[in-house]
Length: 117
Length: 112
Image (cartoon, rainbow over all chains, first blue to last red; front, side, top):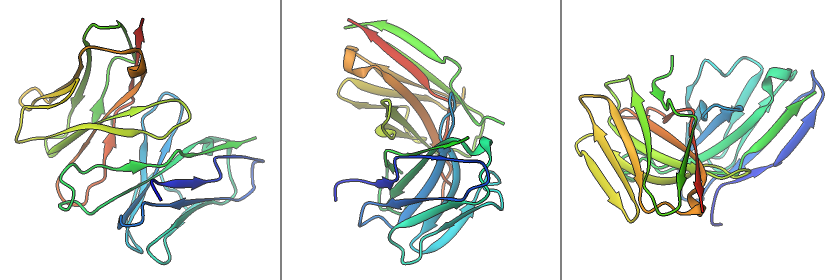
């Protein structure tokens, strides 16, 4: 395991359908983050976990979005009743807790691109 | 509101010359700053960082400068190489558990 992996890499769905993305972080990392990136924008924070606890959620994360990290390892991000505005790249990142890594560095996966028709 | 601003969407530099990418921030609580590089169809990868207690950090061809009073940082790449062509994101965080906040990115093109 050399990095963060995300699945699927690409997802095309029709408006109103539910989609789920999975993220497997670097194994020794206890923090896991979800970001969203749209065209011409930088990554925007959605939510993050420390182990299995979801510690913060952005106001970007509407009620149709839910994220879990049940055993403190992999995480899923589900979007219910997708809308065209949900089309974006969904990025997962992991890190050690601040203080153990003085760079505050996040390691990103390659992302899951969602297209809602 | 955009707390981290990269006002130049793109930059073109000749191979061998210096590339200077700029970033401004508005939140005085930010105490750590990072630069990420992103190639198409890949996730961002960490490049270099700087703590607010420093004004310069150097790693090979990459140097980051921080001017706290101006709330400004810059990334210098010298000499620039064609493989440096990518989108560069500036990011910042406060202390504690705060997540990274990213700018919109600057697309660097290094021309051979």
